[in-house]
Amino acid sequence: MSCKWIPAVTLIFVVASAQADDGTLARFKKNVAPVLRVLCFDCHSGNEPKGESGFDQLEPDLVNGDDAETWHDVLNQLNQGEMPPKKAKQPTAAQRRILTNWMRAALTEAAEAARFRRGRVVTRRLTRYEYANTMRDLLGVDLDFARDLPPEPTSPDGFRNNGSTLEMSPTQIEMYLNIARNALAEAIVTGERPKLIEVSQEKTANGRLPTRKFAGHEPVRPEFALDLKEFPRQGEFEVKVTAEAANPDNEPLPQISLSMGHVPGIIHVPRGEIGRADVSTQSQTFTFRGRMEDFPQPGPISFGNSGFKGMVLMIDYLDGDGKELRYPNRIYVQRPNKKPKTKPTPIPFGQRLEIKVTSVEFKGPVYASWPPPSHQRLLFTSENSDDEAKYIRELLARFKASAYRRPVGDDEVERTAMLFEKIRGQSDSFEEAVRETFASVLVSPHFLYIVEKRDASAKTQQVSSYELASRLSYFLWSSRPDERLLSLAKDGQLTQPEILRSETIRLLSEEQRQDEFVQRFVD
Image (cartoon, rainbow, N blue to C red; front, side):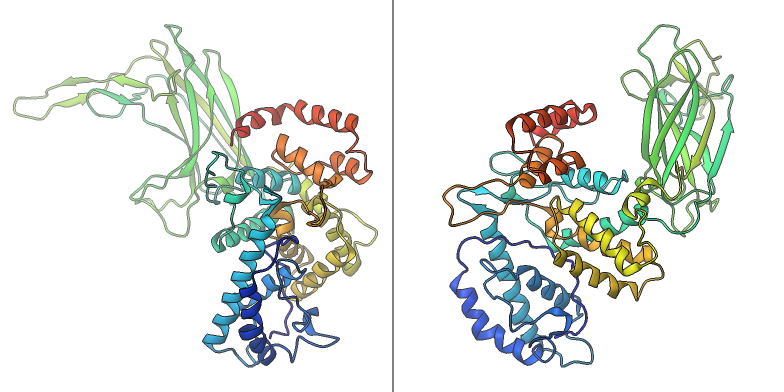
């Protein structure tokens, strides 16, 4: 098969378990092995196989063997058309079908066998919210990581984190890879600090006509607070809105709702809400923050007659119940036999429940430092920074251990370092190659799955310190163990009852995690 590198992007992690299906092994010997001999053994056999993949040495028993990851790599390459290489002998459609069908069946069988041990789940994929939290805590960037992932199905017992329902489809695999690449593009940067865009506008509201020109009770027109002809495509932004309310009858405080999107035109593109704020009778400045990636942005096509291709900030006015403020208009007939027309009545500010916005300011992208903390965290300073070969191995050793929530061996680091070297030759910069290499780690089953290894021959099972750290953290935080938990696991202290008790209290005392724990517990 291919003499090219085999990617480290693997999506099925197999733990030794029950027995492989006899039919699967029989089909391998009868149908698959002969095809491999014809197509692959020239490059991938013997003492020095290319790509470190000796197909003559691969274990066809994916349930009990250790080669499931490599088999999945091979399946990925076949599906992507990367093997055999173009200059090599190509398989017939029937041969390709024999290989891919067998690999899919064997991998599915291995995954199912690994999923259960002694009647309970020992491996499962991270749920959407666990994945989002883990990505945020690992990379140090706060994106909506789970936005494009499909919701998990509910298991028969009513829970969404039941391992038996958390399968992985090819579509999800592609989604995870795209999410990882986008996240790392934000976390690891190149070049100079992006230009800061600042736009502001002051308004007055006294004497204005705040209603649409229709009869009856109609909603207040949303204010086009600010046009952004120039705007950042990504990064954090900050919006400051100065507003006050008139509330003569002491009703519940009205609200402003700030949103951002395209300017409406012939085609109206939905806008996304940034946030809301209660408005009192005292003038206040409210600060809203968000990320540009979370809002609809215009493409090269211009919308509307004006051809305006920018973004727009809009403010809606809401009453104390979150409903649109509505004001009455006055109807009059201009002359007989003509349709009635409306004459909106201007009412001076202060005589009814109303909001006045006096200024809006936008700036972005906002970075506290450059490179941002996420970059400094992932590409930390080292005495080997000038030696790419040594430096990438340092980076990978730390990143993979953090991503996998356990120690990683030198062989695991070396395997991914070899992938980096292949990618580096096709990349414009070191950072670009690191991003793509790290993305392969983030679609590894060691990251996407919570795994507890089990000894099928043992009567009782011992949970390791690192497995205990993950159990505790994902139960209470729905995220990866922090550095303190991992340090205690490394020292073997976490299994001590008093230490475990104190760490449980510490995790529960984190205020920002408490609400999420209660909200997600029933899932």
